[in-house]
Structures are given as C-alpha cells and as structure tokens.
Length: 267
Image (cartoon, rainbow, N blue to C red):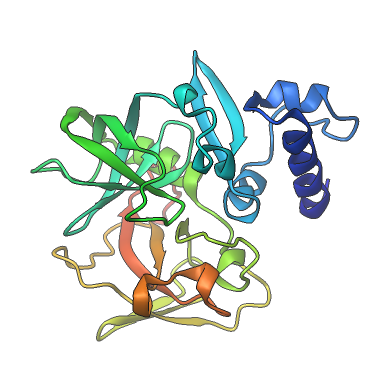
C-alpha cells in the first residue's frame, strides 16, 4: 500500500474510533490494512504527518492522536515509566530511543549520562508546554535510574538500523512538526570541513546536502564502517520550528560510527 493511502486509512480509523487502539484493532476496522505489522518508515512519517502517538500499556502498543492528549483526554493511559537508550548527550537534553523505536528528546538530564546508557525514567509530561516539539519529553528529576550499558557494536547497530530513516524528510516538509531524525549517508560519501558536513542521502533526487554540525563536547570520529547522522531541525527566532517555516533547515546533532562485525573485508 502506498504511504498516502496508508495515512488516510489510519487517520480515518483513529478518528472513527476516537480512542487509543492497537494495530490489530486498526486492522480489524479496515478492509485495506492487510500487513501483519506496519511498515516502520510509514509509522515514522505518521508521527509528524497526523500527530501519531504510540505508547505501551499493559504490554500492548497503542496508537493515538497527539491532539487528544493535548485536549486532556486519555492521559491516564500514558505509561508512568519509559525505558530509553541514550544516543547523544547535549548540554541541556539527551536524544534517546524508546523500546518501540521512536526518537525522543528528554530533559532534564541525570548527571553522568553517557551514550548507549539504558535509562529507566518516570515521565513528568509527555507534552510539555515549554517545549512543544513533538519528540520532547520532560522527565521527573528524581525518577531516573541507569539500568545498563549497551556495549556490543552489533546490538548498537540493531538499534540504529531500527531507527534509521529514509532521507526523504530532508527533502520535503511532508512530516509536519518532525524535529529529530536518524539517517545514513550513502556509504562513505560524506566530507567534514570546518563546522559543516557535505553528504548525499539515499534519495535518488539528492544532489547533496551541506549541513552545519552542531557544537559538541565530543569530537566527530568516524572509526567504524556503519555511519549514522542524528539530525535536528534548526531552531529559529522566537523558538519557531517546522510548523512556522516554509522550509525546514536541519543540522547534524551527532554522528554515530560503529564497526559491523558482519561486514566482509578484503585482507
């Protein structure tokens, strides 16, 4: 099914049901949704395109619309604890992955967090008023516990590949309100200079990106053969983001370089 038809069908069913439902319930309410599991890239698009929110409740992943929660509905269904894998630590926030494959911007930070730490955290607000970017979550300052560290590159690659997106969002504003993403450049087709990076994404129409690299305490190090760019929408005057701009500007927030043990190498 083409994305546009998928989007229309999911949006129609959620509007008709008017409550958070599972993927199986979505399928049962449709004659068009046949796949066993939804295509991951489509789900990522829906997060920005229709304001899709997914969360776990009683071991089930529920699908809902952000505007329901902003209107005060169904907040009692949101989980109190969420597990995150830290992908980048910034000055005032961290970029992290949830267990169900979504990128989040989390704050305030627990002191001493490192990339690839696994964090259990109590969520204070899923839709904070002071940071209305769709991926932002405000955590309870005293409700964070580091429960592990992912050390093996193979496991890290599994997480990154699950999150990695087509570079489509770098060329179009169709995702409305998307402000963070993870994508892979074409293999080794990138070049860092000064505070910028030139690279090609995976889109056939791509004639190259020349993107600023956000200042970081960590030097950019390309030590592995699997490279990912963690990108964020550039903040504009008056704290405006995509929804207030005719064109999205992106910067590279962090670079993840991993060594794939499955990669065949010439000796």
